Image (cartoon, rainbow, N blue to C red):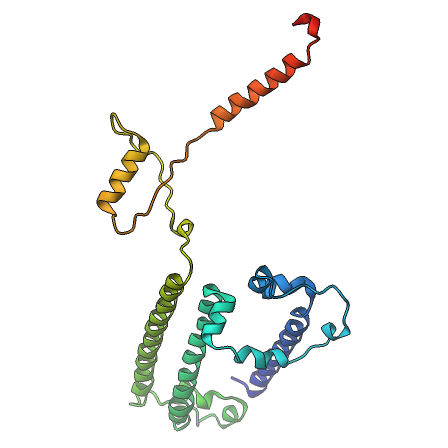
Length: 253
């Protein structure tokens, strides 16, 4: 890797980050985007859309960065909902993985690579490249390669632990959110079609008997929905016939 190429890549990424930061700072203030960034607050009536023009809306500010770190997880969960909370935990998980990988790479792998002498034959190559800090500088057959293998296994194990921890944490928050919210049976409704009707019984009796026998702890109620489009077509046809009869002159009736 050439140093100038690395610096160019860093400059491009920093420029893009600054651009996105500026665009978000401006777009979040626009009245038309309030339903995108805070839809729950708009639905609850806590935030109203402002229609008056304000020059401050066109100026980027960084005050939202500090405010984004102020709410606790409980406040964030209550204001933004469970889906936004899970999305936020994905960023937290990524930061954990990146931090651990950076520590292993900077304080273990990079010093080991730099102490190698595989690339010392090409002195001009050393001054133009950063490969002396990579695994390519470790001597062939060196025991230091086991440090890279061990670091890979350790990193994999730690990432698996982070995944397990985040799964347990998000699951506990999800269950707590369901228990604390009002019952919403429509979120757990199952649509069943083609139910066999027993002799001398009805469809509702068959569903009631089946679920109370095999799923008594999770079954709450049921509702039979019938296809009424044929009846609806007959009613519409009759209504049209009635209108046609009413339109005839009285002497023909």
